[in-house]
Each structure stands twice: as C-alpha cells, then as structure tokens.
Amino acid sequence: MKKLFIVSCLIMVMLWVGGLCAFAYNINHYQTDSSTHTQAIVVLTGGRNRISEAVKLFNDGLADKLFISGVEKNTSLQDISNLQDFPLPENQKQIALENKSTNTIENAIETQAWLRKNNISSIRLVTSNYHMPRSIQEFQYQNPQLNIIPHPVYSNYVAKEWWTKNRSFCLIASEYNKFLYVWLMRRLNIQG
Image (cartoon, rainbow, N blue to C red; front, side, top):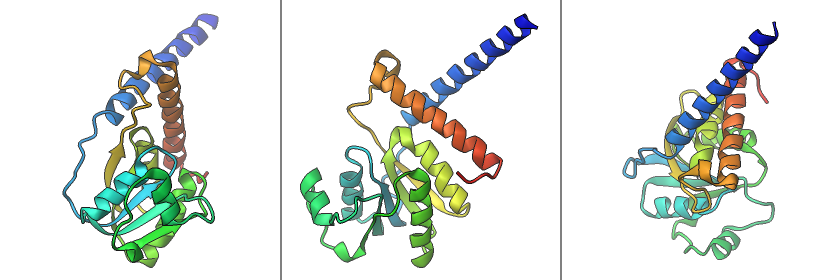
C-alpha cells in the first residue's frame, strides 16, 4: 500500500511538472495577431505595460472602443497616462474605465456586463502572457460565444528561462496552479 502511494505521488508530480512545462512553453510562444479589427480592446490592469500597449493598439485603430478593467477607484485616464507615461488618445469618449473588479473573475464579470450593454461580441484581450490562459478561461465562462483575440504583454521582469530564476519560477508555477484550479472549476461548472 505504501509503495502504491509513493508511485501515485510520483506520477502526480511528473504530470504537474509536465503540465507546467507545457504551460510555460505556450505562454512564451503566442502567435500575436496584430492586424484583425475587433469591436473592443479589453485590458486587465495589474501588470507592467498592459495599459500602454492597449492604448497603442486603440490608437492604431484595431478597435472602436477600449475598456480598462480593474482601475483603482477615483483614478482617471489622465492619472494613468501620467503614471505610465503614454500619450492620451484623441478619441477618449470611446474609453471606459471600470473600477469594481479586484481579480480576474470580477474582471470577466464586469467586462461581460459592459460588452452586453454595448452589444459587443469580439474583443482583443490584453494582459500579461502568463495571465492569458486563465483570463481566457474566465472570459469564455462568462460568454462562450465571445470571440477573443489574445494579445499578450511580455514583461522584462519575467525571465524567458523561467526555471533559472526563482522569482520567475514562482510566478509561472503560481499562475499555472491558478489556471489548473479555474480549468477544473469551469469543467465542473462551479463559479468561484
């Protein structure tokens, strides 16, 4: 019985490590579509360069609307522009700031409400590369028909050779575990 337990644990660890390696490979090898127009660009706050990248895409005309999800309360677009050092877009009336959400699940819920209100069925989702798989899971759970073009943002603080840097390894492993949890909960149709 003890031997069976040890073998089972070893198999579980090997499956987890294999899954982690596949996850890390996938998040570092997205094929970025930089030309398809969507109805909106949705950017999730929380990572470096996400908002400035979304504003650049908006200025390039890749969508008619920009939705910034997870903004601090009482923060304006001007405040964000000053902090992240990007020029304000000319068409600011088409930019919405959402400040209710504090995590990825809430981002997806609040964004879905805005998408429904604006009759939007296609988005370019901008978030960090390591955050993209979980974000897509949450957004598709809220709206399975939503057409999502992933637009990952890569950070200089996350090493491409993530297994050689403790901080990068911990970030990737943590995000992989969160992704596994969300994947399982969505397959079981459990919110939370």
